[in-house]
Amino acid sequence: MLWSRLRRRRKNTIEMSFRDKNELVSGFCIAAFGIYVVVEASRLAYFSEYGGPGPGFLPLWLGIGLSFLGLLLISVNLSGPATGKSSDARPWLGAGRALGGWAGLAGAIALLPLLGFTLSFGLLTGYLLRVVDRRSLWATFTVALGLMLGFHLVFAFALGVPLPAGPLGF
Image 1 (tube, rainbow, N blue to C red):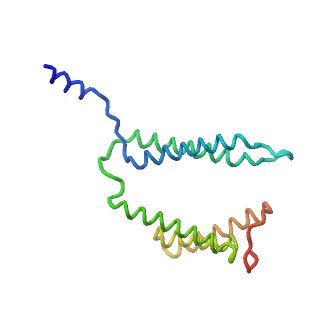
Image 2: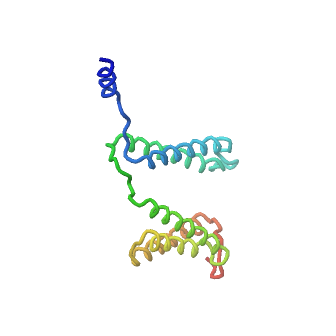
Image 3: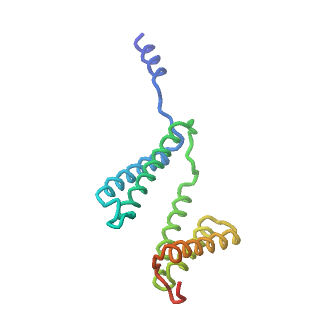
């Protein structure tokens, strides 16, 4: 009799199911980091003395965005049905791609004083698209060139922000 009651009680309990435990943990980490950024940015001035955005403007909104996206990742992960299997059958492959991305970023940082921001950013974009993400050569070239021109036009030309220049002047 006691055994049958325990069995019924176990069937009636609500089990929490989620799609992927790694994505759930990532969502919590992103949301926690976003909250940390918001707290730290709230200590900075939101407006400058000239009435424009101050040093706390961008970090505050980035933290809000990170928190929102982390909570969105958590809610999507909890609302969907459990798949019962991992999203990646070979987890070492994802780790290799992530380490390749970090290596590309380190290379771009090392090339920054030699080539300038625009070229090193273009090479980083090309490396990430072609080597890490295995995109076509045409897509890699057009996206890298478009981002290089876009960053240069927005920051250096329109906003007047001096980007680190290389020997070619950009």
